[in-house]
Image (cartoon, rainbow, N blue to C red; front, side):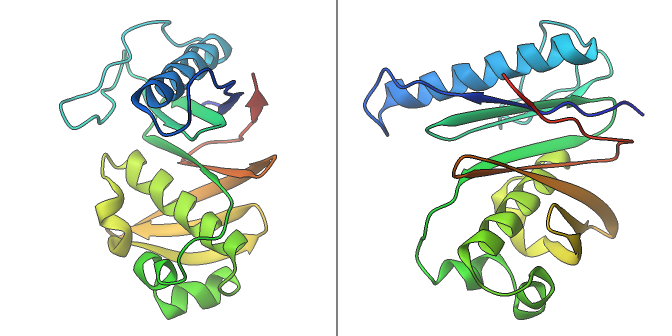
Length: 187
């Protein structure tokens, strides 16, 4: 197994937020983070394609995942299934707690606060991405352990997934995958 090197990249806005131009800029930043990640891990510099549902296709034995928000983009590449997510930490509707996780998961996660909310959200999304699934599968992906402030263990379809979190400014990123070590990089 390889050392995962997730890459986080700041996005400097040239477009008003929440416009098609801004989303295109964010996607391009995520693709640039992917190219930087490829150079760090010796993966191909091209051939990173998605299927019709935007699920990443394996490229010469390398699995990959990208994510983006308004201010940050993220990418990771591995020799086994991997997923990444990044989210801006900010209060949302309280009803989302019940939509994201059950009471036992919130107990394991340490309670219902916005930091825990985004740790659970990013862990679930990264795990689902590693399995080629979308956020419609949140209920199937369950928090089973929180060994420390940077790690969670998720269960999906009977398999356990180790997730590591990383904070940058007012964002949190999560990567899910089977690896020896993780070395986060800011590009």
